[in-house]
Structures are given as C-alpha cells and as structure tokens.
Image 1 (cartoon, rainbow, N blue to C red):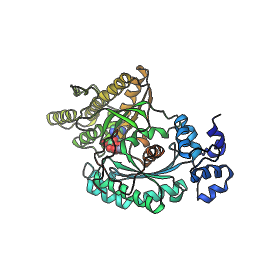
Image 2: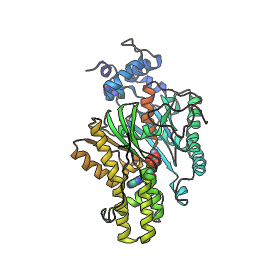
Image 3: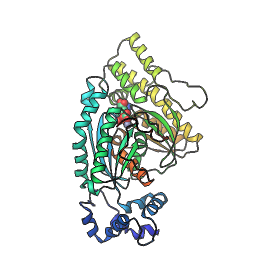
Image 4: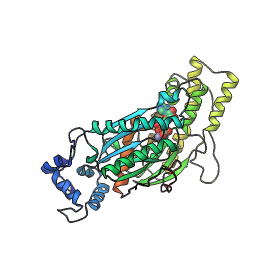
Length: 416
Ligand code: KG4
Ligand code: ZN
C-alpha cells in the first residue's frame, strides 16, 4: 500500500459528498484523522516523511489521482465568461459539493443571442448570491477553501471581468490563493467529475457556442491545439440556424429535439473541405449556415415534418465532420481515449455518432453528463485544482483575457 494512503487514513479522509463538511479549521483539527493532514499542510512540511507537503501532494496526485482525495482540497470555481453566472465548490478536483448556475437565457432570448452589456450587468447582480449559495450548499465558508479559481478567458470581456474582480476581492479578503483558469481547460476537465474519469493522455473535442477545437491532451496542463474552426463555432451555427427557422435561443436544444423526428438524408447540406498544411483537423460551419439560409430563401421556412427534416439534415452536417475528424486525429496521434466537451456535446446525434465511430475505431469515448456540458462553475474548480497543484498562482493583477488560446500562457494584463 502506498505510504501516502496509509498516512492519510483514507478510510476517514476520503469523504463522500455531504459527509465531510469543514465548518472551520478548528473543527477539522479536532478530528484525529484530519488533524494530521491539516497539520502537515499548514506547517508546509510533512511530519512523517520530512518532505515538502506540496511536493508530496503533487507526486501522489500524479501517481494515483485517487490518493489526492486524502488531501481534502477544497476549491471554489467561479464562471462568468458568457451568459451563465456559476459557482461551485469541488473537493480534490473530483467531487462537486455544490454546483450553482444562474442562467441569463431568458434575458437574451428576446434578442436571439447574447447581448454582452446585458450579460455583464446581470453577472454583477448574480455573482455574489451565486457564490454564497455555492458555499452554503457545500457547507463551507471562505476560510475553509484552499484556493479560489476563476475563468479569466476566453470570453466576453465585460462578463469575464465581473468574475475576475469578484474572485480577486474574495481572495484578497480571505487571504486565499487565486488561480486564473482558461474556460476551455474547464470544459476539457469537466469529465473529471465522473466516477470513472479518464486520465490524460486523451484527444479532447470542445464544441460550444464560442469554440470548436480539437486538443491533444498529453497531461493536465499540457494542451496542444490540433485543429479548430476557421469561422463559426458549431454552437454558433446552431444558434444562427435556429434564429432563421424562428426557433428560440439557444438553438441547440430545439433543433436537437426536432431533428429526432426528421430524416437526416432529406437535404444534403455541404461539409467543408478545408485544404492546406495543418488544416486537416480544422472545421468550418459558416458555409453550412449560408447553405441553410439559401435553402430557406428558395423553399420558404418549412413547418411540421419539413422542419424536422431540415433540422436533422443540418444536425448531420455538423455531427459528421466533428466526429470524423476527432476519431481521425485520435488515431493519428495514437490516443486510445476521446473526450467530448462543451455545450454542443449535449447534442444527441453528436453523442450517438461519436459513440458509433469511436467504437468502430476501437477508441474509448468519455461523454460528460448533460449538465456538465454547458457552462458551470464545477469545471472551473476542477481545472483550478489542477492549476493550483501545478503551482500556478495569480496575483491581484490577474486580468481578463477575451482571446486567450488554450495551450499558451495567459496574455499579460490588458483589462481589469
Ligand atoms: O459551453 P456553452 O454553455 O457556452 C459556451 O462556452 O459557448 O455552450 C452553449 C452552446 C449554445 O450554442 C447552445 O446552442 C449549444 O451549446 N447547445 C447545444 C445543445 N445544448 C446546448 N447544441 C446542440 N445540441 C444541444 N442539445
Ligand atoms: Zn463554455
């Protein structure tokens, strides 16, 4: 049995959600099994082994992620990059003790898309109640946290700033470490909240309203972009096509529902064929959107079965290149595992086709549950936990970086 497991008394330290609620440091310290963990951590030295706690934590975390449970790390994740204000407390990067999401969908629906200024204003009103609810549902206070993680890019500048400034204020007043998280890393690591979560390396496909990218995930913190959309994101195409068809925003779910009753072969919409060096795994959806517009202009906006057929045909033209390229890239780079992430990963056809193609290519596919596909605070807390364990810390000069590319360092301060 590894030394770390014995020292940390996993029988008592490994908590089930809801059973271990840290009310205050004093209360933890009073529990014999935890007093040792907490003493080790707060003194910064391992009493038993005489090595730095963080070195040990990192070593054990990489050796066996389950062992990290023995450290009872609590991270608050705050997300406000688009139209969801979300916060969550995650234990050891594996268990969400709370996950609160306040959606602005109703506010933006009447405009058929996100209005950035309205999004920022609503984040300002929602962020504190959402954080308070996340802490109270997890049964912890700010002082119980080990770190505060916040999405610092990419996203809408005004929206990001609300989360970043809130996290900075909370970190400053509680004297807790602060970590800036890339939103796409959050999406990729949301899968870690599953019980049978995959370990890197894996091929990650992030498909959301703002992004469509393939990443070669070599290890936590090592993300190499393999391909991405040249124009619209897949979710953006869903939202724009839905608007053309008179369906509500966000368009993904209504199109998905209608498509279930339709014939995907009814209309042959184009698939982008992107040529050129290194473009093999890139995507493009603006031509598809234009093709749908041209079809509607020529034939009129369909109703009933015609609408279902159009939705199914459009959906097929989105799911086909995404799944084909994800499988191809995984095989090319020698991956055994594929992880689907982002709001569009909730799509039933994308999930189904990905399962079929992954199976026939002999790949293991990992699909997050629907609630973890769209934006949430838990994914930011998970990514924040890993960044924290890697030693990443943000200062009070943490900025919001609307164009931060995952796989590159966060650009230096521009705002905030
Ligand atoms: O990840 P997310 O919540 O926000 C961004 O980071 O962009 O993704 C939102 C996107 C929206 O474009 C929405 O239409 C799409 O995810 N979406 C779906 C489905 N559910 C949400 N797209 C296709 N099928 C769905 N079932
Ligand atoms: Zn997102």
